[in-house]
Length: 636
Image (tube, rainbow, N blue to C red; front, top):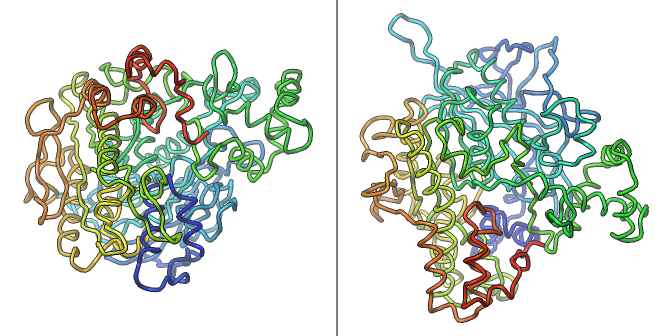
Protein backbone atom coordinates (compact mmCIF):
# COMPACT_ATOMS: atom_id res chain seq x y z
CA UNK A 1 0.00 0.00 0.00
CA UNK A 2 1.50 3.31 -1.12
CA UNK A 3 0.76 5.29 2.01
CA UNK A 4 1.94 2.58 4.33
CA UNK A 5 5.32 3.11 2.67
CA UNK A 6 4.90 6.85 3.13
CA UNK A 7 4.16 6.37 6.82
CA UNK A 8 7.31 4.34 7.38
CA UNK A 9 9.58 6.60 5.36
CA UNK A 10 8.30 9.78 7.04
CA UNK A 11 8.42 8.74 10.69
CA UNK A 12 10.66 11.68 11.52
CA UNK A 13 9.17 14.17 9.12
CA UNK A 14 6.38 15.45 11.29
CA UNK A 15 3.30 16.38 9.43
CA UNK A 16 3.84 13.94 6.59
CA UNK A 17 3.94 10.97 8.94
CA UNK A 18 0.67 12.20 10.37
CA UNK A 19 -0.76 12.34 6.84
CA UNK A 20 -0.03 8.69 6.19
CA UNK A 21 -1.31 7.71 9.62
CA UNK A 22 -4.60 9.50 9.23
CA UNK A 23 -5.20 7.95 5.83
CA UNK A 24 -4.61 4.49 7.20
CA UNK A 25 -6.87 5.08 10.19
CA UNK A 26 -9.85 6.18 8.18
CA UNK A 27 -12.89 3.96 8.25
CA UNK A 28 -13.33 4.95 4.60
CA UNK A 29 -11.57 3.05 1.85
CA UNK A 30 -8.21 4.54 0.96
CA UNK A 31 -8.43 6.31 -2.40
CA UNK A 32 -4.87 6.20 -3.70
CA UNK A 33 -5.75 8.38 -6.70
CA UNK A 34 -7.03 11.04 -4.32
CA UNK A 35 -4.01 10.73 -2.06
CA UNK A 36 -1.32 10.51 -4.75
CA UNK A 37 0.55 13.68 -5.54
CA UNK A 38 -0.75 14.98 -8.84
CA UNK A 39 1.24 16.64 -11.59
CA UNK A 40 1.32 20.43 -11.40
CA UNK A 41 -1.37 22.30 -13.30
CA UNK A 42 -0.37 24.82 -15.95
CA UNK A 43 -2.48 27.93 -15.43
CA UNK A 44 -3.96 30.08 -18.17
CA UNK A 45 -2.00 33.30 -18.79
CA UNK A 46 -3.66 36.63 -18.00
CA UNK A 47 -2.44 39.79 -19.72
CA UNK A 48 -3.16 41.79 -16.59
CA UNK A 49 -0.29 39.95 -14.87
CA UNK A 50 2.47 41.00 -17.25
CA UNK A 51 5.35 42.44 -15.23
CA UNK A 52 8.86 43.51 -16.21
CA UNK A 53 11.55 42.34 -13.80
CA UNK A 54 15.25 43.18 -13.93
CA UNK A 55 15.82 40.00 -15.96
CA UNK A 56 12.93 40.24 -18.37
CA UNK A 57 9.17 40.24 -18.84
CA UNK A 58 6.95 37.58 -17.26
CA UNK A 59 3.26 36.71 -17.37
CA UNK A 60 1.22 35.05 -14.64
CA UNK A 61 -2.39 34.07 -14.10
CA UNK A 62 -5.55 35.03 -12.24
CA UNK A 63 -6.04 32.85 -9.17
CA UNK A 64 -8.83 32.40 -6.62
CA UNK A 65 -9.67 34.85 -3.84
CA UNK A 66 -9.14 37.79 -6.19
CA UNK A 67 -5.39 37.29 -6.50
CA UNK A 68 -2.78 37.02 -9.22
CA UNK A 69 -0.08 34.37 -9.18
CA UNK A 70 3.32 33.82 -10.80
CA UNK A 71 4.96 30.41 -10.51
CA UNK A 72 8.45 29.16 -11.24
CA UNK A 73 10.37 32.43 -11.48
CA UNK A 74 14.15 31.82 -11.53
CA UNK A 75 15.90 33.86 -8.85
CA UNK A 76 19.44 32.56 -9.50
CA UNK A 77 21.32 30.59 -12.13
CA UNK A 78 20.87 26.82 -12.13
CA UNK A 79 23.43 25.39 -9.64
CA UNK A 80 24.53 22.60 -11.98
CA UNK A 81 27.85 21.43 -13.36
CA UNK A 82 30.64 23.72 -12.18
CA UNK A 83 28.09 25.75 -10.15
CA UNK A 84 27.32 22.84 -7.83
CA UNK A 85 28.60 23.62 -4.29
CA UNK A 86 29.01 27.27 -5.12
CA UNK A 87 27.13 30.27 -3.86
CA UNK A 88 24.14 31.10 -6.08
CA UNK A 89 25.09 33.02 -9.21
CA UNK A 90 23.02 35.77 -10.90
CA UNK A 91 20.25 34.70 -13.23
CA UNK A 92 20.85 35.62 -16.86
CA UNK A 93 18.32 37.85 -18.60
CA UNK A 94 15.74 36.31 -20.93
CA UNK A 95 14.58 37.87 -24.18
CA UNK A 96 11.12 36.38 -24.69
CA UNK A 97 8.25 36.74 -22.27
CA UNK A 98 8.59 34.11 -19.53
CA UNK A 99 5.39 32.17 -18.74
CA UNK A 100 5.20 31.87 -14.92
CA UNK A 101 2.28 29.46 -14.99
CA UNK A 102 3.35 26.23 -13.28
CA UNK A 103 5.44 25.17 -10.33
CA UNK A 104 8.88 23.74 -10.94
CA UNK A 105 10.54 20.56 -9.69
CA UNK A 106 11.67 20.54 -6.05
CA UNK A 107 15.37 20.49 -5.31
CA UNK A 108 17.01 17.04 -5.46
CA UNK A 109 15.96 14.86 -2.49
CA UNK A 110 14.99 11.35 -1.42
CA UNK A 111 11.30 10.92 -2.17
CA UNK A 112 8.77 11.52 0.59
CA UNK A 113 5.25 12.88 0.67
CA UNK A 114 6.80 16.30 1.31
CA UNK A 115 8.53 16.18 -2.08
CA UNK A 116 5.15 17.04 -3.67
CA UNK A 117 5.92 14.91 -6.71
CA UNK A 118 5.00 11.29 -7.51
CA UNK A 119 7.41 8.64 -6.27
CA UNK A 120 8.09 5.74 -3.94
CA UNK A 121 10.32 5.15 -0.96
CA UNK A 122 13.91 4.80 -2.15
CA UNK A 123 13.46 7.05 -5.19
CA UNK A 124 15.51 10.18 -5.72
CA UNK A 125 13.34 12.96 -7.13
CA UNK A 126 13.59 16.61 -8.09
CA UNK A 127 16.21 18.51 -10.04
CA UNK A 128 19.48 20.31 -9.41
CA UNK A 129 18.06 23.16 -11.48
CA UNK A 130 15.62 24.19 -8.78
CA UNK A 131 16.22 27.79 -7.67
CA UNK A 132 12.77 29.19 -8.41
CA UNK A 133 10.22 31.17 -6.44
CA UNK A 134 6.46 31.76 -6.57
CA UNK A 135 4.45 34.93 -5.90
CA UNK A 136 0.82 35.71 -5.07
CA UNK A 137 -0.54 39.24 -4.82
CA UNK A 138 -3.97 40.85 -4.41
CA UNK A 139 -5.34 41.94 -7.79
CA UNK A 140 -6.26 45.40 -6.55
CA UNK A 141 -3.76 47.37 -4.51
CA UNK A 142 -5.24 50.17 -2.42
CA UNK A 143 -4.05 53.70 -3.07
CA UNK A 144 -2.30 56.13 -0.74
CA UNK A 145 -3.76 59.56 0.04
CA UNK A 146 -1.94 61.12 -2.89
CA UNK A 147 -3.36 58.53 -5.28
CA UNK A 148 -0.18 56.50 -5.72
CA UNK A 149 -0.37 52.72 -5.58
CA UNK A 150 0.30 51.42 -2.08
CA UNK A 151 3.24 49.04 -1.64
CA UNK A 152 2.26 46.01 0.43
CA UNK A 153 4.33 44.08 2.97
CA UNK A 154 6.19 41.06 1.59
CA UNK A 155 6.13 37.66 3.32
CA UNK A 156 8.74 35.10 2.20
CA UNK A 157 7.80 31.52 3.19
CA UNK A 158 10.62 28.99 3.79
CA UNK A 159 9.36 25.41 3.68
CA UNK A 160 10.30 22.71 6.18
CA UNK A 161 11.51 19.14 5.74
CA UNK A 162 14.67 18.92 7.83
CA UNK A 163 16.65 20.73 5.11
CA UNK A 164 16.68 17.28 3.48
CA UNK A 165 13.30 17.18 1.72
CA UNK A 166 10.43 19.53 0.96
CA UNK A 167 8.96 21.75 -1.72
CA UNK A 168 7.31 25.14 -2.00
CA UNK A 169 4.59 23.55 -4.15
CA UNK A 170 2.37 22.65 -1.18
CA UNK A 171 2.12 26.18 0.16
CA UNK A 172 -0.07 28.30 -2.08
CA UNK A 173 -0.51 31.92 -1.07
CA UNK A 174 -3.80 33.15 -2.46
CA UNK A 175 -5.56 33.13 0.93
CA UNK A 176 -2.91 34.86 2.99
CA UNK A 177 -2.19 37.38 0.20
CA UNK A 178 -5.83 38.35 -0.15
CA UNK A 179 -6.93 38.19 3.47
CA UNK A 180 -3.90 39.97 4.91
CA UNK A 181 -3.11 42.30 1.99
CA UNK A 182 0.47 41.12 1.58
CA UNK A 183 2.66 39.93 -1.27
CA UNK A 184 3.35 36.26 -0.57
CA UNK A 185 6.55 34.64 -1.89
CA UNK A 186 7.71 31.02 -1.53
CA UNK A 187 10.90 29.40 -2.78
CA UNK A 188 12.83 26.20 -3.30
CA UNK A 189 16.40 26.04 -1.99
CA UNK A 190 19.12 23.39 -2.18
CA UNK A 191 18.77 20.51 0.27
CA UNK A 192 20.78 17.71 1.84
CA UNK A 193 24.35 17.17 0.66
CA UNK A 194 23.80 19.63 -2.20
CA UNK A 195 22.64 22.37 0.16
CA UNK A 196 24.91 21.86 3.17
CA UNK A 197 28.31 20.38 2.44
CA UNK A 198 31.81 21.35 3.46
CA UNK A 199 35.17 19.79 2.64
CA UNK A 200 38.71 21.07 2.43
CA UNK A 201 38.85 20.06 -1.23
CA UNK A 202 35.98 22.43 -2.01
CA UNK A 203 37.39 25.23 0.14
CA UNK A 204 40.84 25.06 -1.40
CA UNK A 205 39.40 25.17 -4.92
CA UNK A 206 36.76 27.83 -4.17
CA UNK A 207 36.91 31.30 -5.70
CA UNK A 208 34.99 33.08 -2.95
CA UNK A 209 34.17 32.78 0.74
CA UNK A 210 30.56 31.98 -0.18
CA UNK A 211 31.71 29.07 -2.36
CA UNK A 212 33.88 27.82 0.51
CA UNK A 213 31.19 28.13 3.17
CA UNK A 214 29.21 24.92 2.73
CA UNK A 215 26.00 26.85 3.49
CA UNK A 216 24.57 26.75 -0.03
CA UNK A 217 20.94 26.30 1.02
CA UNK A 218 21.09 29.35 3.28
CA UNK A 219 22.85 31.32 0.55
CA UNK A 220 20.00 30.42 -1.81
CA UNK A 221 17.49 31.97 0.58
CA UNK A 222 19.67 35.07 0.84
CA UNK A 223 19.78 35.25 -2.97
CA UNK A 224 15.98 35.10 -3.05
CA UNK A 225 15.86 37.99 -0.58
CA UNK A 226 18.21 39.95 -2.85
CA UNK A 227 15.91 39.17 -5.79
CA UNK A 228 12.99 40.51 -3.75
CA UNK A 229 14.86 43.73 -3.03
CA UNK A 230 15.41 44.26 -6.74
CA UNK A 231 12.12 43.07 -8.24
CA UNK A 232 9.24 42.88 -5.78
CA UNK A 233 8.06 46.45 -6.32
CA UNK A 234 6.70 45.57 -9.77
CA UNK A 235 4.42 43.03 -8.08
CA UNK A 236 3.15 45.61 -5.59
CA UNK A 237 5.53 44.71 -2.77
CA UNK A 238 7.52 46.99 -0.49
CA UNK A 239 11.21 45.96 -0.44
CA UNK A 240 11.60 47.95 2.77
CA UNK A 241 9.03 45.77 4.57
CA UNK A 242 9.95 42.09 4.17
CA UNK A 243 9.04 39.37 6.66
CA UNK A 244 10.73 35.96 6.53
CA UNK A 245 8.71 33.10 7.98
CA UNK A 246 8.99 29.35 7.98
CA UNK A 247 8.17 26.14 9.83
CA UNK A 248 10.46 23.41 11.20
CA UNK A 249 13.62 23.53 9.05
CA UNK A 250 12.16 26.71 7.56
CA UNK A 251 12.04 28.17 11.07
CA UNK A 252 15.60 26.96 11.65
CA UNK A 253 16.67 28.78 8.49
CA UNK A 254 14.92 31.92 9.76
CA UNK A 255 17.25 31.81 12.75
CA UNK A 256 20.11 31.29 10.28
CA UNK A 257 19.10 34.50 8.49
CA UNK A 258 19.05 36.34 11.81
CA UNK A 259 22.58 35.14 12.46
CA UNK A 260 24.07 35.71 8.98
CA UNK A 261 25.89 39.00 8.33
CA UNK A 262 25.16 38.47 4.62
CA UNK A 263 21.40 38.77 5.23
CA UNK A 264 21.63 42.11 7.05
CA UNK A 265 19.13 44.64 5.71
CA UNK A 266 17.41 42.15 3.40
CA UNK A 267 14.47 41.52 5.75
CA UNK A 268 12.80 43.50 8.49
CA UNK A 269 10.74 41.02 10.51
CA UNK A 270 11.00 37.30 11.23
CA UNK A 271 8.67 34.44 12.24
CA UNK A 272 9.96 31.02 13.29
CA UNK A 273 7.35 28.27 13.67
CA UNK A 274 8.71 25.21 15.48
CA UNK A 275 12.24 26.22 14.54
CA UNK A 276 15.65 25.28 15.91
CA UNK A 277 18.78 27.21 16.81
CA UNK A 278 21.17 24.30 16.33
CA UNK A 279 24.29 24.97 14.28
CA UNK A 280 27.31 22.77 13.51
CA UNK A 281 31.04 23.34 13.45
CA UNK A 282 32.92 22.75 10.21
CA UNK A 283 34.85 19.96 11.95
CA UNK A 284 31.67 18.09 12.91
CA UNK A 285 30.41 18.34 9.34
CA UNK A 286 33.68 17.26 7.74
CA UNK A 287 35.86 15.04 9.93
CA UNK A 288 35.79 11.27 10.04
CA UNK A 289 33.66 9.95 12.88
CA UNK A 290 36.72 8.42 14.59
CA UNK A 291 38.94 11.50 14.26
CA UNK A 292 40.36 13.14 17.43
CA UNK A 293 37.78 15.86 16.83
CA UNK A 294 35.02 13.56 15.57
CA UNK A 295 32.61 14.43 12.81
CA UNK A 296 29.10 13.22 12.09
CA UNK A 297 28.75 9.59 10.97
CA UNK A 298 27.63 11.00 7.61
CA UNK A 299 30.18 13.81 7.43
CA UNK A 300 31.68 14.80 4.08
CA UNK A 301 34.74 12.59 4.62
CA UNK A 302 32.60 9.62 5.59
CA UNK A 303 30.50 10.29 2.48
CA UNK A 304 33.61 10.33 0.30
CA UNK A 305 34.78 7.02 1.74
CA UNK A 306 31.38 5.48 1.04
CA UNK A 307 31.44 6.82 -2.52
CA UNK A 308 34.79 5.10 -3.15
CA UNK A 309 33.39 1.84 -1.79
CA UNK A 310 30.28 2.16 -3.96
CA UNK A 311 32.44 2.68 -7.07
CA UNK A 312 34.57 -0.38 -6.15
CA UNK A 313 37.57 1.93 -5.86
CA UNK A 314 38.06 0.70 -2.28
CA UNK A 315 37.11 -2.57 -0.64
CA UNK A 316 36.20 -1.11 2.75
CA UNK A 317 36.27 2.05 4.84
CA UNK A 318 39.88 1.59 5.98
CA UNK A 319 41.13 1.32 2.42
CA UNK A 320 39.00 4.28 1.37
CA UNK A 321 40.44 6.42 4.18
CA UNK A 322 43.96 5.46 3.19
CA UNK A 323 43.29 6.29 -0.45
CA UNK A 324 41.76 9.66 0.41
CA UNK A 325 44.79 10.58 2.51
CA UNK A 326 47.02 10.35 -0.58
CA UNK A 327 44.77 12.34 -2.92
CA UNK A 328 45.15 16.01 -3.74
CA UNK A 329 42.31 18.43 -3.13
CA UNK A 330 41.86 18.77 -6.88
CA UNK A 331 41.40 15.01 -7.23
CA UNK A 332 38.89 14.82 -4.39
CA UNK A 333 36.94 17.79 -5.78
CA UNK A 334 36.85 16.09 -9.18
CA UNK A 335 35.46 12.91 -7.60
CA UNK A 336 32.71 14.89 -5.89
CA UNK A 337 31.71 16.71 -9.05
CA UNK A 338 31.59 13.42 -11.00
CA UNK A 339 28.84 12.05 -8.74
CA UNK A 340 25.24 12.14 -9.83
CA UNK A 341 22.73 13.41 -7.26
CA UNK A 342 21.46 9.83 -6.86
CA UNK A 343 24.96 8.63 -5.97
CA UNK A 344 25.38 11.37 -3.36
CA UNK A 345 21.99 10.81 -1.74
CA UNK A 346 22.26 7.02 -1.71
CA UNK A 347 25.74 7.12 -0.17
CA UNK A 348 24.47 9.57 2.43
CA UNK A 349 21.62 7.22 3.36
CA UNK A 350 23.93 4.19 3.52
CA UNK A 351 25.82 5.85 6.36
CA UNK A 352 22.74 5.99 8.59
CA UNK A 353 21.55 3.27 10.93
CA UNK A 354 18.00 4.16 10.00
CA UNK A 355 17.99 5.55 6.44
CA UNK A 356 14.33 6.47 6.85
CA UNK A 357 15.27 9.12 9.42
CA UNK A 358 17.40 11.53 7.37
CA UNK A 359 19.67 14.01 9.09
CA UNK A 360 22.63 15.99 7.84
CA UNK A 361 25.06 18.55 9.27
CA UNK A 362 23.62 21.95 8.38
CA UNK A 363 23.80 25.65 9.26
CA UNK A 364 27.57 25.40 9.38
CA UNK A 365 29.54 27.89 11.47
CA UNK A 366 31.96 28.67 8.64
CA UNK A 367 32.89 32.16 9.90
CA UNK A 368 31.52 34.00 6.88
CA UNK A 369 27.95 33.08 5.99
CA UNK A 370 27.43 32.14 9.65
CA UNK A 371 29.66 33.33 12.48
CA UNK A 372 31.81 30.78 14.28
CA UNK A 373 29.91 31.28 17.55
CA UNK A 374 26.77 29.34 18.57
CA UNK A 375 23.46 31.15 18.20
CA UNK A 376 22.93 31.48 21.96
CA UNK A 377 26.12 33.53 22.09
CA UNK A 378 25.23 35.62 19.04
CA UNK A 379 21.73 36.49 20.24
CA UNK A 380 23.04 37.59 23.63
CA UNK A 381 24.99 40.47 22.03
CA UNK A 382 23.41 43.73 20.90
CA UNK A 383 25.35 43.68 17.63
CA UNK A 384 25.69 39.91 17.34
CA UNK A 385 22.83 39.32 14.91
CA UNK A 386 20.30 41.00 12.61
CA UNK A 387 18.00 42.34 15.31
CA UNK A 388 14.43 42.67 13.97
CA UNK A 389 10.98 42.18 15.52
CA UNK A 390 10.24 38.47 15.78
CA UNK A 391 7.48 35.95 16.45
CA UNK A 392 8.77 32.58 17.62
CA UNK A 393 6.72 29.66 18.83
CA UNK A 394 6.15 25.93 19.00
CA UNK A 395 3.26 23.49 19.24
CA UNK A 396 2.16 22.00 22.53
CA UNK A 397 2.69 18.37 21.44
CA UNK A 398 5.47 18.77 18.87
CA UNK A 399 6.99 15.28 19.03
CA UNK A 400 3.72 13.37 19.02
CA UNK A 401 3.86 13.61 15.22
CA UNK A 402 7.02 11.48 15.46
CA UNK A 403 6.11 9.37 18.49
CA UNK A 404 2.92 8.17 16.79
CA UNK A 405 5.03 5.86 14.60
CA UNK A 406 7.84 5.13 17.08
CA UNK A 407 7.83 1.48 18.26
CA UNK A 408 9.23 2.60 21.61
CA UNK A 409 5.88 4.21 22.33
CA UNK A 410 3.33 2.76 19.89
CA UNK A 411 2.47 -0.73 18.68
CA UNK A 412 0.93 -0.89 15.23
CA UNK A 413 -1.67 -3.64 15.30
CA UNK A 414 -2.30 -5.59 12.09
CA UNK A 415 0.27 -3.34 10.47
CA UNK A 416 -2.25 -0.48 10.45
CA UNK A 417 -3.81 0.43 13.80
CA UNK A 418 -1.63 2.30 16.33
CA UNK A 419 -1.96 1.41 20.00
CA UNK A 420 -0.09 3.44 22.60
CA UNK A 421 1.88 1.05 24.80
CA UNK A 422 1.71 3.15 27.97
CA UNK A 423 -0.44 6.28 27.82
CA UNK A 424 1.06 7.86 30.97
CA UNK A 425 4.60 7.40 29.64
CA UNK A 426 3.56 8.59 26.18
CA UNK A 427 2.13 11.83 27.58
CA UNK A 428 5.08 12.35 29.93
CA UNK A 429 7.68 11.99 27.19
CA UNK A 430 5.62 14.12 24.80
CA UNK A 431 5.68 16.82 27.47
CA UNK A 432 9.46 16.49 27.94
CA UNK A 433 10.09 16.72 24.21
CA UNK A 434 7.68 19.63 23.71
CA UNK A 435 9.33 21.53 26.55
CA UNK A 436 12.64 21.07 24.72
CA UNK A 437 11.15 22.59 21.54
CA UNK A 438 9.78 25.59 23.42
CA UNK A 439 12.85 26.01 25.59
CA UNK A 440 15.46 26.19 22.82
CA UNK A 441 13.37 27.57 19.97
CA UNK A 442 11.31 30.09 21.91
CA UNK A 443 12.07 30.91 25.53
CA UNK A 444 15.86 31.09 25.48
CA UNK A 445 16.04 33.01 22.22
CA UNK A 446 13.33 35.44 23.32
CA UNK A 447 15.10 35.97 26.64
CA UNK A 448 18.48 36.60 25.03
CA UNK A 449 17.15 38.87 22.28
CA UNK A 450 15.06 40.92 24.69
CA UNK A 451 18.05 41.41 26.99
CA UNK A 452 20.35 42.39 24.11
CA UNK A 453 17.85 44.67 22.32
CA UNK A 454 14.99 45.49 24.73
CA UNK A 455 13.46 48.04 22.36
CA UNK A 456 12.72 45.39 19.71
CA UNK A 457 9.57 43.34 20.17
CA UNK A 458 9.91 39.56 20.50
CA UNK A 459 6.61 37.65 20.63
CA UNK A 460 6.17 34.02 21.73
CA UNK A 461 3.32 31.59 21.10
CA UNK A 462 2.21 28.02 21.78
CA UNK A 463 -0.20 26.28 19.40
CA UNK A 464 -2.61 24.02 21.33
CA UNK A 465 -5.31 22.91 18.85
CA UNK A 466 -6.03 19.18 19.26
CA UNK A 467 -9.58 18.61 18.02
CA UNK A 468 -8.88 15.96 15.40
CA UNK A 469 -11.40 13.10 15.33
CA UNK A 470 -11.33 10.25 17.84
CA UNK A 471 -12.72 6.75 17.35
CA UNK A 472 -12.21 3.18 18.49
CA UNK A 473 -9.47 2.92 15.85
CA UNK A 474 -7.34 5.67 17.37
CA UNK A 475 -7.65 8.59 19.73
CA UNK A 476 -5.98 11.17 17.49
CA UNK A 477 -6.17 14.01 20.07
CA UNK A 478 -3.95 11.86 22.31
CA UNK A 479 -1.88 10.17 19.62
CA UNK A 480 -1.01 13.31 17.62
CA UNK A 481 -2.67 16.22 19.44
CA UNK A 482 -1.16 19.60 18.65
CA UNK A 483 1.71 17.87 16.87
CA UNK A 484 4.52 19.19 14.74
CA UNK A 485 3.25 20.90 11.60
CA UNK A 486 -0.45 20.85 12.49
CA UNK A 487 -0.55 24.65 12.60
CA UNK A 488 0.44 25.02 8.93
CA UNK A 489 -3.08 24.53 7.58
CA UNK A 490 -4.30 27.20 10.00
CA UNK A 491 -1.62 29.61 8.78
CA UNK A 492 -2.75 29.27 5.17
CA UNK A 493 -6.46 28.74 5.92
CA UNK A 494 -6.27 25.63 3.77
CA UNK A 495 -7.81 22.48 5.23
CA UNK A 496 -8.45 20.71 1.94
CA UNK A 497 -5.46 21.41 -0.34
CA UNK A 498 -1.89 22.17 0.55
CA UNK A 499 -0.46 19.32 2.59
CA UNK A 500 -3.72 17.37 2.15
CA UNK A 501 -4.03 15.86 5.63
CA UNK A 502 -6.98 13.49 5.23
CA UNK A 503 -9.30 12.89 8.15
CA UNK A 504 -7.48 15.26 10.48
CA UNK A 505 -10.32 17.76 10.28
CA UNK A 506 -13.83 16.58 11.10
CA UNK A 507 -16.98 18.55 10.48
CA UNK A 508 -17.49 19.05 14.23
CA UNK A 509 -14.25 21.03 14.50
CA UNK A 510 -14.86 23.22 11.44
CA UNK A 511 -16.30 26.35 13.16
CA UNK A 512 -13.55 26.39 15.80
CA UNK A 513 -10.65 25.79 13.44
CA UNK A 514 -11.93 28.36 10.96
CA UNK A 515 -12.12 30.92 13.77
CA UNK A 516 -8.62 30.03 15.00
CA UNK A 517 -7.24 30.16 11.45
CA UNK A 518 -8.68 33.64 10.96
CA UNK A 519 -7.22 34.85 14.26
CA UNK A 520 -3.77 33.42 13.49
CA UNK A 521 -3.68 34.91 10.01
CA UNK A 522 -4.74 38.28 11.41
CA UNK A 523 -1.93 38.22 13.99
CA UNK A 524 0.65 37.20 11.38
CA UNK A 525 -0.70 39.81 8.95
CA UNK A 526 -0.66 42.61 11.51
CA UNK A 527 2.93 41.67 12.37
CA UNK A 528 3.95 41.77 8.70
CA UNK A 529 2.42 45.23 8.35
CA UNK A 530 3.68 46.79 11.58
CA UNK A 531 6.18 44.54 13.41
CA UNK A 532 3.69 44.04 16.25
CA UNK A 533 0.91 41.38 16.14
CA UNK A 534 -1.08 43.59 18.55
CA UNK A 535 -4.81 42.90 18.32
CA UNK A 536 -4.62 41.41 14.82
CA UNK A 537 -4.95 43.06 11.46
CA UNK A 538 -8.41 44.43 12.21
CA UNK A 539 -7.64 45.32 15.85
CA UNK A 540 -10.44 43.16 17.26
CA UNK A 541 -8.55 40.34 19.02
CA UNK A 542 -6.91 39.99 22.46
CA UNK A 543 -3.65 41.94 22.47
CA UNK A 544 -0.51 39.89 21.89
CA UNK A 545 2.17 41.50 24.04
CA UNK A 546 5.94 41.08 23.88
CA UNK A 547 7.70 38.24 25.65
CA UNK A 548 8.89 38.85 29.22
CA UNK A 549 10.14 36.73 32.11
CA UNK A 550 7.18 37.29 34.41
CA UNK A 551 3.44 37.47 33.89
CA UNK A 552 1.63 36.55 30.69
CA UNK A 553 4.37 36.12 28.09
CA UNK A 554 3.10 33.88 25.27
CA UNK A 555 0.01 33.79 23.09
CA UNK A 556 -1.78 30.44 23.38
CA UNK A 557 -3.51 29.61 20.10
CA UNK A 558 -6.50 27.29 20.48
CA UNK A 559 -10.10 26.93 19.38
CA UNK A 560 -12.81 28.95 21.13
CA UNK A 561 -14.11 25.75 22.75
CA UNK A 562 -10.74 25.28 24.51
CA UNK A 563 -10.23 28.86 25.61
CA UNK A 564 -9.44 30.49 22.31
CA UNK A 565 -6.42 32.73 21.75
CA UNK A 566 -5.20 34.35 24.95
CA UNK A 567 -2.04 35.42 26.74
CA UNK A 568 -0.65 33.04 29.38
CA UNK A 569 2.56 32.52 31.34
CA UNK A 570 4.87 29.74 30.16
CA UNK A 571 8.55 30.00 31.04
CA UNK A 572 10.52 26.72 31.05
CA UNK A 573 14.24 27.01 31.83
CA UNK A 574 17.27 24.81 31.07
CA UNK A 575 17.88 24.37 34.79
CA UNK A 576 14.27 23.40 35.36
CA UNK A 577 14.40 20.75 32.64
CA UNK A 578 17.67 19.34 34.00
CA UNK A 579 16.24 19.10 37.50
CA UNK A 580 13.08 17.51 36.20
CA UNK A 581 15.03 14.76 34.45
CA UNK A 582 17.28 14.26 37.49
CA UNK A 583 14.39 13.86 39.94
CA UNK A 584 11.65 12.16 37.89
CA UNK A 585 10.78 9.12 40.01
CA UNK A 586 8.87 7.52 37.15
CA UNK A 587 12.14 7.00 35.27
CA UNK A 588 13.27 3.70 36.77
CA UNK A 589 16.15 2.87 34.43
CA UNK A 590 19.52 4.56 34.80
CA UNK A 591 20.15 4.24 31.06
CA UNK A 592 16.74 5.75 30.27
CA UNK A 593 17.50 8.80 32.42
CA UNK A 594 20.88 9.26 30.74
CA UNK A 595 19.31 8.94 27.28
CA UNK A 596 16.64 11.53 28.03
CA UNK A 597 19.29 13.98 29.28
CA UNK A 598 21.41 13.49 26.13
CA UNK A 599 18.43 13.79 23.80
CA UNK A 600 17.29 16.94 25.59
CA UNK A 601 20.59 18.82 25.62
CA UNK A 602 23.05 17.33 23.12
CA UNK A 603 21.84 14.98 20.39
CA UNK A 604 18.63 16.16 18.82
CA UNK A 605 17.32 18.60 16.25
CA UNK A 606 17.68 21.29 18.89
CA UNK A 607 20.44 23.47 20.25
CA UNK A 608 23.37 21.81 22.02
CA UNK A 609 24.49 25.15 23.43
CA UNK A 610 23.35 24.18 26.94
CA UNK A 611 25.01 20.76 27.11
CA UNK A 612 26.76 20.21 30.48
CA UNK A 613 29.06 17.15 30.30
CA UNK A 614 30.00 17.32 33.99
CA UNK A 615 26.39 17.34 35.07
CA UNK A 616 25.69 14.47 32.72
CA UNK A 617 28.51 12.40 34.17
CA UNK A 618 27.11 12.92 37.68
CA UNK A 619 23.55 12.11 36.66
CA UNK A 620 22.06 8.93 38.12
CA UNK A 621 24.65 8.85 40.87
CA UNK A 622 27.50 9.02 38.39
CA UNK A 623 26.09 6.17 36.35
CA UNK A 624 25.84 8.18 33.15
CA UNK A 625 29.62 8.15 32.84
CA UNK A 626 29.13 4.54 31.72
CA UNK A 627 27.16 5.63 28.65
CA UNK A 628 28.88 7.61 25.93
CA UNK A 629 26.35 10.16 24.64
CA UNK A 630 26.81 9.12 21.01
CA UNK A 631 25.16 5.76 21.63
CA UNK A 632 21.84 7.50 22.12
CA UNK A 633 21.69 8.95 18.64
CA UNK A 634 19.06 6.67 17.14
CA UNK A 635 19.66 7.83 13.58
CA UNK A 636 23.25 6.53 13.36
